[in-house]
Amino acid sequence: MLRTIIIPAVALLALVGCDEQKSSQAQTTTTAATEPKVADPVATARPEVVAAAPATSPEANARATASRTGSLDAYSGRTFTAGPVSLRLNADNTFRMDETDGSRKVEGQWQFASQSNLLVLSDPKGDAGTAQFPMRCHFQESGDAFRLGETAGSCARFKDMTFKPAAG
Image 1 (spheres, rainbow, N blue to C red):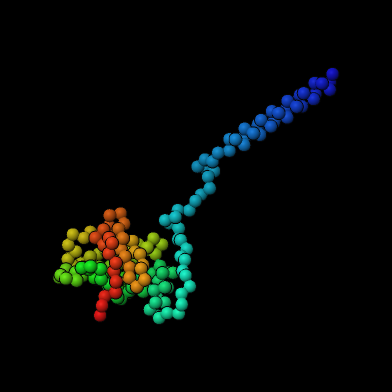
Image 2: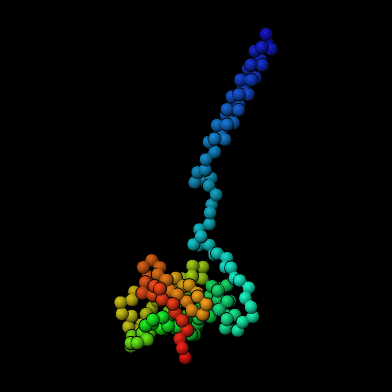
């Protein structure tokens, strides 16, 4: 008789134990406290991919280095034009922007955030017209030229314009 009571009791306890194990597995949901932290893609530097290039001129090598390091050294000290606008980014972090067919010009300061490819033009002096400063532009390299894209409503006047090296 003892045997007939013990075996069903042990079996019942085993079933209860299995049910508790299943319910504890089913309840394993993540909460804000247990979720793994994921790095912010905007704040984290992203690795740049650079393809191997054949031997080129020192100027082309400087541009390739600028692409890898996220600096504007390859564009510094040179004048670029896009439509009716010319832009010069100087090595001392000053800029000059002129109308190529007019008399308006603006000078000021520039900064570049390499992690976000953001060029900021600020502290304007001269005839800025209706342009709003600081002007925050997404900087996109395109060979020997570059494009400035709109960022949060800023830099919209340069949308779809490619700045190419000025002749001369």
